[in-house]
Length: 245
Image (tube, rainbow, N blue to C red; front, side, top):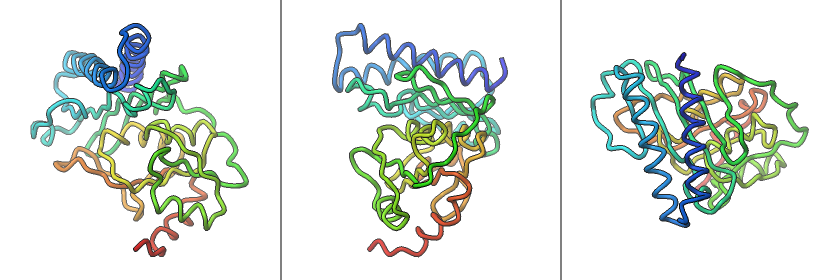
């Protein structure tokens, strides 16, 4: 398999395992979330160690090591992005499998098991026509103040949603147009979504316009912007000029 085919297969396999666990384990709440995180992580890590033994690996659910920092190729995975949504029986959660090469998000797959859909960097689909009135996808529990402020100026609708992967894929799926996040994330939260979004021709950057760089010693990535390219300049301008103090 190519790297992209492997990413998609692993994301789908982990998603199927998670659905089965949620249906038949008898667990719920935090116990289900913890069990799902572990089961999906075990599956992904074991497969990558076997099939790509020379590559580095960074997972939300595994202890990080400095070994990956010396690797050109590093797999960055989030076994359950949106554990809360998964454990609550919702559909807005995802499995992320990405490959960063020299710090760039080169390959990615985002599985949305609740929707029976996997979006991939190697098989881009046609983007829906952008809505005439923009829609900003935001956290359903804690919308970023920057996103709320920008939405007000643009007269945009807010679309609450769960996981980062689900939010990013909502733009590709035509449910939203802009994903502006400033509440803090880590590399595993957005590497696969960014790889997929870039392959679909979307703008992806930090909210100051700088590039998103992966496989860093500090895995914290506090903010990002994913949107249609026609919106990027205006959104970046607004974020740079608004006073949020």
